[in-house]
Length: 305
Image (tube, rainbow, N blue to C red; front, side):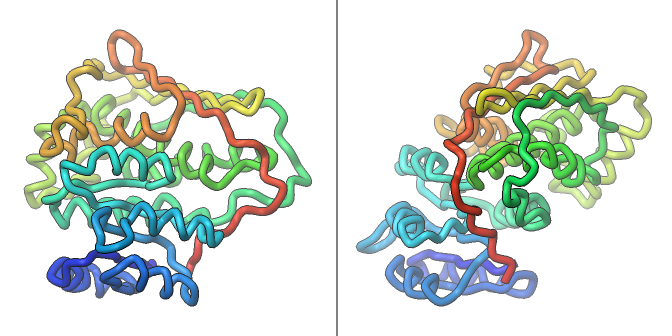
């Protein structure tokens, strides 16, 4: 995956290159101006940028890219004092955010998730010769983290038929499906709470394998329904877990130190959809997304290098 990493601190750039340089095609930049020049000649699958930069901020940098017609997905890195800026970045289309100080393993997880989730399906929208006007589909899903990416991609096939759907809406719905279905598998079906997840990820246990072994021993499936009507997408997910109280999930805005494993997914979903509602038990969730006006041109592809 080709990544542009933008940070004005040389030590951070060097650390990022040391950790991720062998697994990704990295280009490093120390200023937004330098990064803009690079983007004029090179395409990227993903941009990771600090918010606070000399002269031009990371948000202004992304805005200028959008003005240039560059729609590369991006991740922002910010400080606690810049959380409002991070929210603006999410509204601009950021696929994730990290609050300093952050852990590199959290960055690694996000990069892996992005690569599996988005790069595998680069072009979902065709020339609108076959258009979807209205739809409602129901799926029964066997819980499995190993199959999560494939499950999401299969569900997204129906979304791809919506006429003129904007790339930003595709990414937003896909991100919400990934986070919520993943939660249903991990916490609903496998019954793993955030404390256990943190402990398992810090151990030598293969977390995906551990979750799937638990899921193999249960008979229940996850029920997913997705509908499209009047330029609006509706999704509901229900598992057979004991549920949880969404109000007790840490909010990464008010509790940044708790954002690594708990609360991040729900927060990201809320920033990408219009409405997110849980039932009283907490084992059923619904969200809706109003789509942007149909595009008259084929959206830009995600660069594959």
